[in-house]
Length: 125
Image: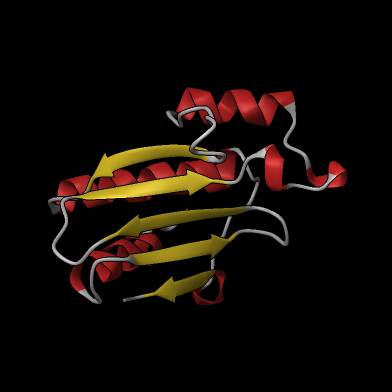
């Protein structure tokens, strides 16, 4: 998967807006990943949808749940109801690694091979 759109999205929330920037990647009608940060920050907080927000027909399988953990997502908690992680994004290497992490999740867990500009929704404070 080409990570260029993901890297652009990460850079946008780190370099534009204000303190409460985020983007959402709509992978399918039901599946999404979101990432939040602030202008000038060094880390990005990410969430991947959990079964709590999915209809019975869209629930993640045991295999998908295991893959999320294997890739490096933290299991939902009472205060974080989606899978979550906080990753460094303080240089180009870290941003590349974060983009690859998100791309791996999109393809390996949610079975999508491509993303388009229309997949991304932004909120810049």
